[in-house]
Image (cartoon, rainbow, N blue to C red):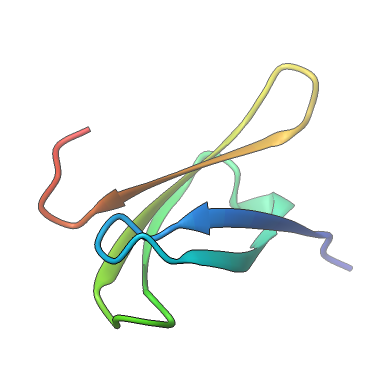
Length: 65
């Protein structure tokens, strides 16, 4: 069974706040998901902190990070 973690992110394009579900098994991965409001591609970077908490950062597709 996978564990899902609810996170609130802001779209880097339209600024809308979105509730997203992140699978804890995605730690260390990067993927692209379209914004639910403006449909632009958001790059999600998922990492695990030392205490086990998930950290989610989002970027525009053409943004370097």
